[in-house]
Image (tube, rainbow over the protein chains, first blue to last red):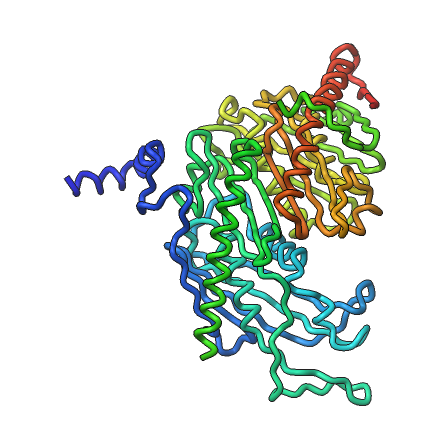
Length: 271
Length: 226
């Protein structure tokens, strides 16, 4: 009996998963409003100023942050820069509307819009010197929403960053490598994606195969101050106000889980 | 029924021109206040074998801003507009074809994303593509003191704490959403209520615009103003 099940799963993967979802069941036994277990490790890349690795289900992404000194732009002389870039390793497979470029932009919007990063705090000396943070997310394998796991890796890696203090002495920057300070960061944003379909209730944290069967995605991002930092709905079945409110409650609960996970990861590494 | 409550929502004057690009299968210029977007639709047309789908048409959406090379912000908007199209156009009626959509921002004086969604809907109707529903859209911003401004101009957008755009279908339900900044659940739902109540107003305008076009025999572009 077990052999036949596996053959069916192999030859007709869509029918297998659809059949389960029609009964409200998911392949890994989760409820439709449950997330998968996530593990985070920080400080994995010693040559980076901040880094972390995040794993959820079959997804694995690493984020590395390099800080360099640069000149502020003329339009914004009191601000530094943060440059987000997401890369999919060539062995990953991910089908989605959101190109990596769109995901990079969404992560940047959430970081700046939620005021997690205050670009003014990255400025060392007005018009002369500022920090430029290069945030690179390398996706080693994708099994579900790339946005969720990438944002989680970016916000955690930013907490891991330690910058040397820089002073301007007689017109020249003086960097003190012994004095390291973490970044001053605002409310912590994380996000949850729902897979939307006409017949099923919204699937929280869909796997890659579940995502392919859904006709739309919705991502909700909550900060640890219970404000929404982003609500992106990419088509799919239209949601009434009630369904939307239910999704918001579920998203808030799971984002809180992520916030606690980040806190406990950082506390355990600092010991 | 949320559409029966005519909540007074302030929006700028709207104007559209159907058939503005004569070589395209469908096109529309949609203007609200000073913000205007042109949408051109080409298709169903031949598709490259690599992108061919047997279940339905392949959609390609390009967003161009007024000046400059498209970058990540435009790609993000393309993702949203592609998702809009996929769930609005009955793509399964045109398998093995490509439908190509280009959205050109002519002038951005605030609320450009909602302007884009409405230009898209009008262009789809001008192209006579079969649609599941029509779209209406509304942008709003929340200021520091919690006040909501609907259909903001660029100047009003400057002082925002959060910027929200809702794309609503004919039933008044949320089809697409794009946000920036921090806001509460209540604020989001307040904006959503305002956007849903606009559905009838926008659909009446579309009806007038398309009726005017159909009543003209010549192929010249037709202008309709609010």
